[in-house]
Image (cartoon, rainbow, N blue to C red):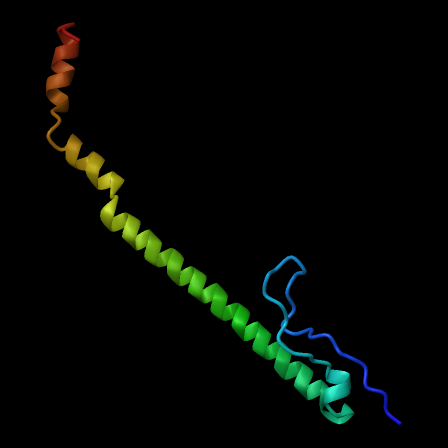
Length: 101
């Protein structure tokens, strides 16, 4: 006779302090036949790896968009260059030579 014990949900794994709890129980050694466990485990690792790359690429995309936004709206070099464009360095040198400054 097979004894059924109560299984606690364990997937997806969340920390104990997280208010969201795991949704369902997953145990590859019990749920998947032995000859297919390696295939299922490799597919699972491949899927997790793809999700990590998705998160990485999305983060890079957001970082690039933020850099473009900052460059367009807060162009500090352009602001400094525009202030210095009307500055007459020759006049300042002459004033220094005449000890005015």
